[in-house]
Image (cartoon, rainbow, N blue to C red; front, side, top):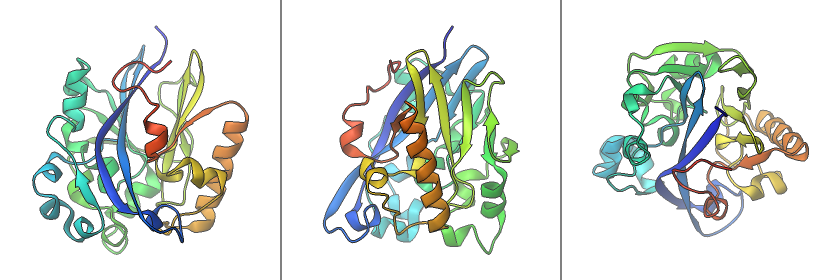
Length: 252
């Protein structure tokens, strides 16, 4: 059995375009992605989207961020609903991998209660630091659910055969990571928020929301090199790109 990759849109967020493309006016509505990777040795999920509470009480869940983002998130669009539609039991997900721990990437972590959680050590430690985590949107209600934690340092081979590899792409947060998935059709890189939009990479536009702008610029350079070597990039929040992504079926 080859590695298979499935993509899901788990709701939408609308916000000022300036948050994504500095010095640009207007607003943008962006998808909130999650991915399922099926490997002969098990199943992994990369990013879990938003918590279901956000569907009915965005302010209660997000606080002041509800003033920044307009949430479009209907019942059935949460991760467990998307997995169920693909006939996948959430209790049988083996590995939970977060690009980082913001609410739209880790909000659904508690829905995968049996998975082992794979997170960059520097992200995990920043989230647990009371002087750092809350100030940078790394809130315990998203990530503190008693998972068996595997903190990793840099590049990490999830299944030991080079087919699914965590890639450190620091900058957006202290320990942001992307995911390289080697399909029969070629390499795919799930960028997470290391690259919001296609234009982010094409124009090397570091967003205003960045833990370390220089580190994020270096991560964009890495993604560009991978793209030049033939990898397909799945941009973190690009609405035009996501119109081309098949939902809930194996990506060719």
